[in-house]
Image (cartoon, rainbow, N blue to C red; front, side, top):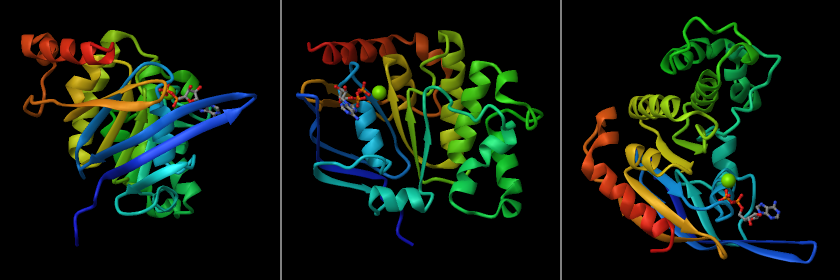
Length: 256
Ligand code: ADP
Ligand code: MG
């Protein structure tokens, strides 16, 4: 079988019109994320990061261009369980236990739960929540809730994992722990990862490439390769080469 194709965006454009206001959220966004790669998108508020992701997930249509997810159109990929997604506010169902939250995408896709028990448990174990299967979201810390969201995103065995600022609500120390965890989880699952983030250090630590966007119109201004060997150790966060790359990305981000 041919290897899956990752994510391809070709000339994607999107304009929102309403109440006399016109926002060109995306102009000519072209990007290829090879299968198994890790891409981070960074840019100021309103530059179209979430819109790119929503289009790739099939939640929103593009006005121009084409999007392919593992060789399929976004909605078809979503229906086939090819894509998984985790958002900033873990968006868990508060009345359902950890296990039952992780099962949600299987229910949505109409997959029989009895065939997926091992998979559900494996994902809970993978994110380090063994023993919390029957806990309710309200009984968990913010970091644990984000872990549940990631387990849920992975339960359908998605080839492509989208994350929109998944650790944005966490403090710095917990965020770095989650970055290390996410690297491990991504390496174990072999999925193509697409991370929207505000954190330059998070982007550089995790990604193979950092895509910098600017607003008005939302567009890609530069794609920067991250050369550090994997697996990356937390000590990378204090490496001078790491800081030099973060500084360079900050310059591009702030228009330098
Ligand atoms: P980001 O995630 O980078 O902060 P978004 O993709 O959410 O940016 O938004 C990009 C731009 O498009 C912003 O100006 C935002 O206000 C606008 N926008 C996003 N979604 C809608 C919508 N459904 N209707 C109108 N404008 C929208
Ligand atoms: Mg956003």
